[in-house]
Length: 83
View 1 (cartoon, rainbow, N blue to C red):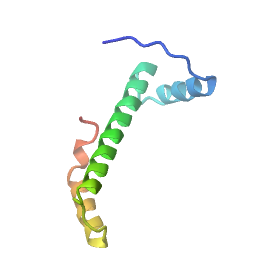
View 2 (cartoon, rainbow, N blue to C red; view 1 turned 90 degrees about the vertical axis):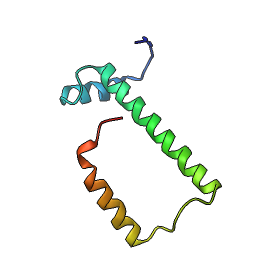
View 3 (spheres, rainbow, N blue to C red; view 1 turned 135 degrees about the vertical axis):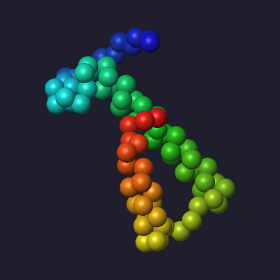
């Protein structure tokens, strides 16, 4: 694993320390890696959405579509956190 040294504002350091203290992360590095991975996922989703728009590969958002999406999300609710 690579090492990266960064300078962050005191307020950000305090935010990271709070997240670690709340018990969700063992170290500040673990929290930062998680945040960066979430950013990567968001970037990938954004690219897929833009590609779908470019290719006219999308459907109208309707209440029925939201119902299907909610159903899919509830069926996959045990799989969060895995990449």
